[in-house]
Structures are given as structure tokens and as C-alpha cells.
Image 1 (cartoon, rainbow over the protein chains, first blue to last red):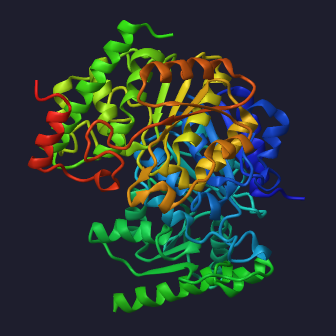
Image 2: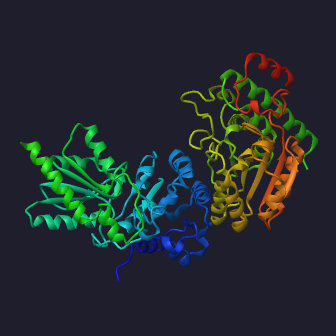
Length: 316
Length: 276
């Protein structure tokens, strides 16, 4: 059985925890869900379960970081970027203390728990915090790299995790670099900038459309902040049509990040956004939520067709 | 026990700090006088008697840490740090100016000797707890001192941290409440009555010491006693007077953050012993 993204995360914590005794892991009574429990079992002395107190947890992490520890803060994305935000902005963003906030169950991946537990605004919130890096891994290899990057980088970082199983995109020894997106499939007609769950969906959509003679480039924008400006320019210039795809609101997330880059440089190309359209979701099976709220492979395919229509009209 | 000469020296410093604070806040026409005056002796005893700090190497890892959670008392923190040698006393005149190292509320990146950013209330004890645990995990003998305001105790996060301190109880953490009884909008008993504060801390598993927060020897003794208690977290509730030393400011919430006009400035300075 394939593992969930959060399971890969917990395993990575243990892996790097063996090498570095400055790593300390905090959890707010959801270590079974975040999978920080794996770290607890391996290093009980370096796992602090603070109970259901996310604000206090994030503040404690700031204190730990201030004396040289490397604290990983674990709870649901919806809560760490709300209850934890005051401490995150005061001590992480403003004071540059290198706290690592890990928001699991992001997007609608905590499907049946409903909108109170979904996180569709976390990227927007954390992207607006100066000095924070925002990373959205999509599989085992990128999750492992992201954890290592958190350990090796003296910066505050928001790491977005999911409850669900995502397809593996990369070989396990793939190398990544912060601020550099990765083209995971070449194509010439349109570029899909995707992150997280949507990388796999974009590849599926690309495969589908290849049969219709449409050549789709897919770029994994795991580094939401800093964003890969060069890759965005290059793809805009080469394919002249862009679709962004994220399991997040279309306000403030990847779609905004890509749009901002192109708008600032006066380089507009036809664009379409795959994401949640300024609404809350509901509870239900994850796959059905993806279909209803428009963030599955067929939603990506539809937006690609639409953006190509625009591109064609522009060309006339 | 602190000897008489040392007591006299600290009292003399505190008089000077109060005068200089009024000078600077009058000159700058911004900043918080009330809570700065109440925390004067607490910060002075900590930085001149209690804490292991090194003004020439403000970032050395084995130093003690001070977290002024009630960050609006920054002007007094800056005054004490300057006297202690972290930066020139004249720099106080840049308080709250553009390009100043002395921000309206403390920021650890800007000011030598400031160990932690504060301003948004209710977070300092969480941070202090984390720092204390982190120091302990690394085998460092440094202590962490957290100074809370009493109005700040309205914040729920303080009580999350109080609960967590009981669970993790690092022995290198000392918490002090500047118990001046007044917050921005009025007396704490009116704005948000906190009831029996001692009983509340005790119910969370803490040991409570009380002292007069304007008597330096009393503060010093309490800080020594706090270090001998290792079975549970300790809080020193230091009874203080908001606006201490300036008659018309004492106990008055109106002077929480009000600019000092010329007429009030003259009265305040004469009460504090006149200009030098």
C-alpha cells in the first residue's frame, strides 16, 4: 500500500533527527495524524507534546529556535496558520527566528472532517509573511528534501503536508533547490504550474490531452516562496499560455504568485487558474470533493482547453 | 542578601532611570510611561544584580535571557540596557525615530541586549519556556527570565504556557509579574478581573512568591529564593504601582501610553528630583 505524504514526512524527521540532535519536534495532540509520532517513538526526549495549544506551541518553538535548536511545529495546516500565526509573524517573520511550521491535512485532504478542518488559505497567509519560505512538496522525494532543507536552512519555513497518498513523481534520490521549479514534463503549447496534489493531476491531464494533439508542459512549483521567476518567464515566452493548479483558494496562492511575476514584468499571456474559487468546501469523499470543487485532472484539462482557446483568439 | 551600599546604588540608578525616561518620552512625544515606571526596579535588579550578561558580547550563548513580554515598557528596558553598557545612553534620544535601533517595542534583531522580540501580548512565557527547555537540552546553565504584565494575563496563551510549564518544568525559568493593577482602559479589576491570581497559578501547579516590586532588596531575595525551588515552576508576583514615582501618573490608566505635555513634564521632573 502506498504511503501518505505525512508518513514520508514523519520518516524524514526520524532520518534527519538521527544526524542532528538540535532537531526538536513539537505537536499539539495530533502526532498520530501529523506522523510526528514517528519522531516521538525514536527520540522521546526531543518530542514535546504541548496539548491542544497551537499558539503556545508556536511561541515555544520561537524560544527553542532563539537558543539554537531546530524546532518543527506540527499540527493541521488550518490551525498552525491561524492560532499559530501571531507567534509565526512576530518571531518567525519579523524576528527571523528559524521556526519550521508544518501544516498537515492541507487543502481538502481532511475530507470528511469538513471545511472547519480544510486549509484553502494557508499558502496565501504564509506567503504574505516576510522572510518565510513556503514549500509545497508533492511526493516522497520532495518531502524528504523539504525536511532536509528545513534542517539546513536558518530561516523560518512553512511546509505544507497532506493527509493523503500522492503518486511519486521523482526518483528518491532526485535533487531539488529552493526557488527553482522543476519541469517534470516537457511540452510546447501550454505550461501548467502546479504544486502538491496537482502535480500528479497535471501530468494525468497532460497525458489525456496528448491524445488530442495538445503538448502540455508541467512544472512543479514546490517552492512557492521564493518563486522561480526565470522559469515562469521562460515558460510564458515559450508556450505563451499558462495554467496554474493548486489545492488552495485561487486568491493569494500559486496563481497569485505566478500572476504577480508576469504582471510586474509587463508580460501577460493567457492564463487560467485551477483552484478553489473563493468558497469553502464541505465534507465528503476526497475524490468527489476534488471533482465538485474543480481540482482534479479533468479540471486541469478543462482549463488547459480554455486557455488554449484564449491563446488562439489572441493569435488572430 | 543585598548589602546597603548595593541597595543604595540601585535605588540611585532607578531614580536616574525614571528621570531619563520622562525626559525622553517628553522629548519624543510618544511611548508608554505608566508600565515603564512600574517595571523599573524589576529590570534594574535583573540586569545589574541577577543576570549573567556580557555587554561586550551580547550574543554569547551562555548568557542568561530576558524576555520582556510586556513589550510596551521598552523605553525602560532600553534605559537599563544602555546603563549596563549595551549601547550609548545618548541613543535613547532616537527612541521611535526612523532608522533607530530602538523600535517602539523590543526587537531582537535591532537592539544589542534585547534577547527577544515582544509587543503583541501573551506570548513571552511560551517563548521563555521554549528557550529554557532548549538551553537545558543543550546542557547550558543559562537561566531565562520572563517579565509579564498583569493586564497581559488576560491573554489565553499565557495560561496555555502556564499549563505547559507545569508539564515540562525546566528548572532554569523564572517568571515575574509586574503586578501594577492597571491596564490601558482602566484598573485590571474592572477591565478583566483576574480574581485570586496566586490561587490561579497554584491551581496550575506553580509556586507563587510575592514581593514589593519597588524594593530592590525584596526583589533580589525573591529571585534567589525562586532558584532554590526546583520541583515546580515559580512565579514572583511583584506588587508595583503603575506610573511609580510621578504622583499624577500613579495608578492612572490615562498615562498608559499618553504623550507628556510641557506642564506635566515640569511637575514630573521636579518630583523626581529635578534636572541634572
